[in-house]
Image 1 (cartoon, rainbow, N blue to C red):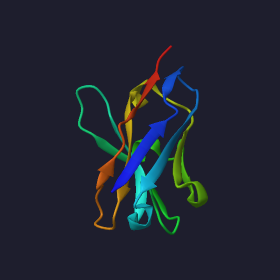
Image 2 (spheres, rainbow, N blue to C red):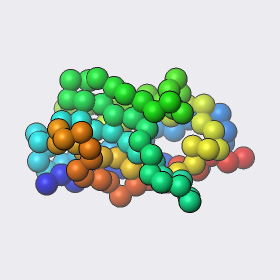
Image 3 (cartoon, rainbow, N blue to C red):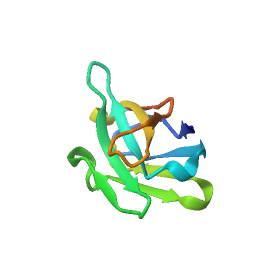
Image 4 (cartoon, rainbow, N blue to C red):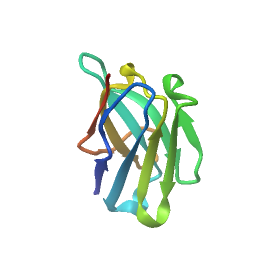
Length: 117
């Protein structure tokens, strides 16, 4: 199995930036892609970004041009750089690992991001 641990969340003012990290351990060679979802209070969990084993990325429209997903294969870590943050970005952000079926198989515990003045 795979274990995922997120970090980097916190409180930031509108227009600010945060960098989230997700470290994978366990059966890491089974991972085809990794990415991020988020869930705001009263809303369903929504996809925000993914990166494949080959480095191809994809983003949800609300974060295009503001968020950047990247990875460090040597450290088994995926990052989410979040710039120009808006109050509507407030949510719990969850890292996931995909084994090649096109949907998350493992989830991290989540890290809270709050954008407020």
